[in-house]
Image 1: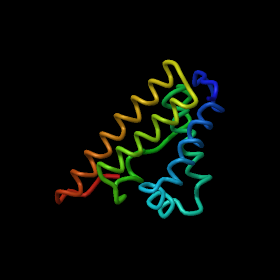
Image 2: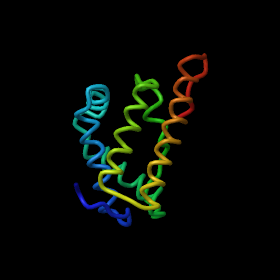
Image 3: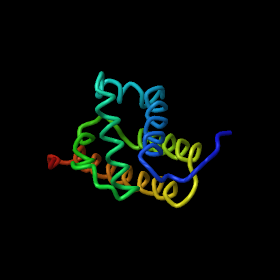
Image 4: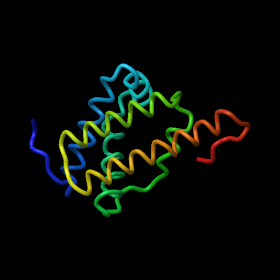
Length: 131
């Protein structure tokens, strides 16, 4: 088992993000969706995710954008979010411990819940997402 540590710098964020998306890319349920949307732009996507989590967990404001917008029209539902959350929690628990690790898992859970509610709302109604 790997030695777990606190999330305390950009290198930790990069380890978390890279490890998580390696799992996503290989996943039977999520891999095809993410790979077909991101295609050859994984480096750009990962950089954006580094900045997002750096801003959220380290209070180093490097991310500017709207996290929901790219997900608004993705073909995803509850089962996809459940798998996404499971992979994220597994990744964090595999590498990290402490308050920031707990915060990362809590924030991912809340983000997944919010994204799912918004996607279901837009898919079930006549309202178009504001992005």
